[in-house]
Amino acid sequence: MVVTKTMDFLSNKFNFLFRYKGFETVTGLILLINPLALLFQLLSILRTENAEGVSLATFCIFLMTQGATVAVAIKSKEKNLFVSMVLSVIITFAIIGLVIIKNLM
Image (cartoon, rainbow, N blue to C red):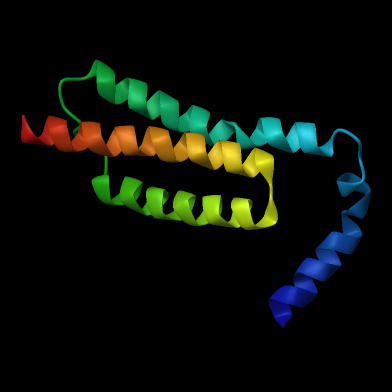
């Protein structure tokens, strides 16, 4: 109940932003920051001989969160969120795979 009231309050306070014509474009671009940040991590792992310092558990948690967010994006038909999270899932899978491979070497 507190969460619902808080969300309703914030929705009313920021309604002017949600009605802004460029809102979808701006938020869509901001959502691409997540896969971009992950891409830098992936490139860093590719450039090194080992994946020392990269937490496999953390990226597994990221993957679960991203998967849940993909489901929410599908349910709510949020295209920008869907694209951002699918790209994040793909990159996170690659990171997890590389960490496993490099740790076995």
